[in-house]
Length: 351
Image (spheres, rainbow, N blue to C red):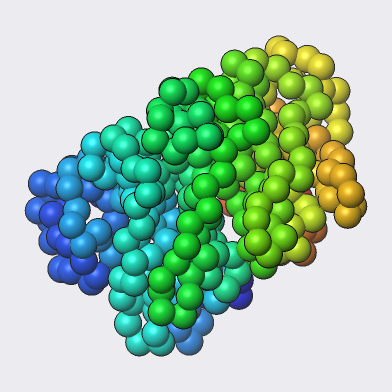
């Protein structure tokens, strides 16, 4: 969603129509299975209307076009298509000129390889000029982009665009890449594009970790390495990450965390509820990142997957956490979360 809340991009990676390009006919010919699509909506006189229906210019079955990130002004859109060309992956960049959407760039990693899944995650800076892209199965050891010596160690690429849509590429690896780190599963950029958070969910047997980097105007350096205060195997810490506009507040989701705690800053060391999930909030004081909150659902339950998605507001004072398998049968806002029967219907919590 755009910064003013008036433009929304929705990715549907499993959409099946055989159409191609921008605003093709919404036909019902579902023969290009899981090719994917994106829908863009904008507020017009208080009403939401569909502004664009976007397919890849060269869609193919199983591409999964639909990992989206929208710039703050709502006019620049990145769409990851991580399974394109046998999983090499790509990112399409689109721009809105006030009247129409147009494709401006098709980005592929300079060291692209089958199975890298470039485009698994995407994140824009506020002005739509800096883009971070995760490739969560890329396999180099960090010293040579093309050697593929560490399976699934993975990488993040950062692109800086000119007004003419040309760009340069920065290539970021974990400081000590290891097999199945899945570094780049999630990415988030600050408003100015100078702070980058990267989730590595596979680190230490899927304990997970988050790396924070800073750009000094010429190069990227690692600022902090973060693991959960109650880290444990198979917690998937870093599955989702979100930075505030100034880059000083970071939210991290660990959707397989197992504590039975409820609410904020409860008992962390308890592994009674598989995949209950948790979210963590960190703050940067100019020198170090410190944990500010450990957050659990008010109705914590096994299998709820709280923390599958996190999103922090620009000012860092509001946090949304998704629990896509929460199973209360409550409806609307502030219903009774302890009434069962909802069958993995899901919920969102606002803090």
